[in-house]
Length: 116
Image 1 (cartoon, one colour):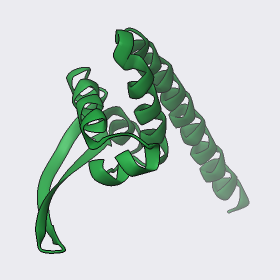
Image 2 (cartoon, one colour):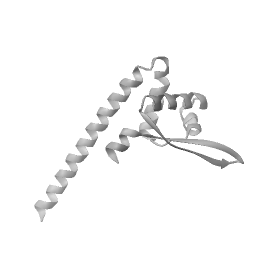
Image 3 (tube, one colour):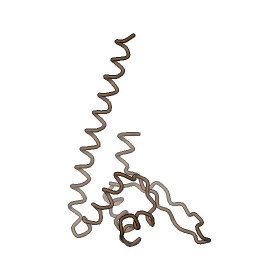
Image 4 (tube, one colour):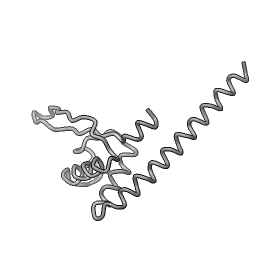
């Protein structure tokens, strides 16, 4: 019984190590893509770093958190989607103070593929 448990622990550790390596490789690949975005790369890099910690975002809240204009974050999200770093998961509308606000939820596609 103890050997079966140890085998399960070993397999779990190997799986975790593989996922960590894949995520590290993905980070490197994505930062290289962002680095080729020219002037837009600085904002895209800041957004990407934020997304690594917060893979599901609301553009307005992200803009506030990063100290950027809504339009700047929105444009950067579009660039990351065009580069296939992000995928637009869904666009919803919610009521807040009687105003409709679009919410763009993005997720890192490859992160979901690796970890999902």
